[in-house]
Image (cartoon, rainbow over all chains, first blue to last red; front, top):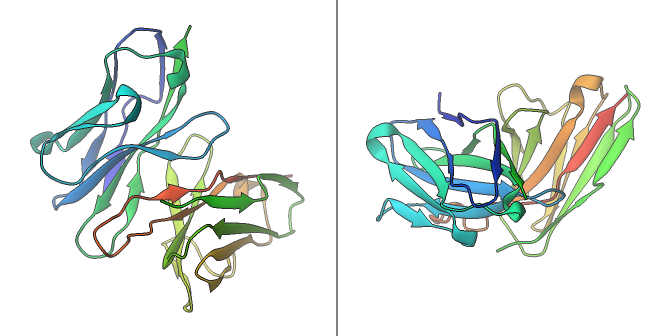
Length: 114
Length: 117
């Protein structure tokens, strides 16, 4: 069965530190990949997405992610985090063959200390 | 894009009762999705609701426990029936306006935080 793994459940960083959140998926076919973010008290919103083409995708607020097909990974990065990046981050996969379905990782709760 | 309004935002309910969650979208969408997010866990798809047809439930979820209505292209409800403390969770409504046409970006409501006592 398809699955998405996020390795870090809780991350605490100081402002200006670099961030990398891991995401691996298990599916042998073509996928669309997403990172969603949920700020405290707000709804889930799209941070960035990969459909095809350049495997390094840039999203909002200085975030980027790299799709490495051979590693089934789609790690999220930000060179310098801010206090306002405190949120929960979800990696998600949509398979593009058969029935479309979103599969989410368990989420990573990031806390940035001012 | 789509803006989703979900009600109620939270509720505390007695076991054995039912709660109906409403989801209103600001545009017409073919498919709406209902998810459950249990504490410390991922979002799990409960069912997919198409207008004019029965909802399609995922493994582990049944219509008697989670009946869904989809009366039109902008509205859906999810009922959590005969609740037990194990149903305490966040329930999320979601839409993907371009679903089936290659655009699979999803939009989410703010969720309903349900506590069953």
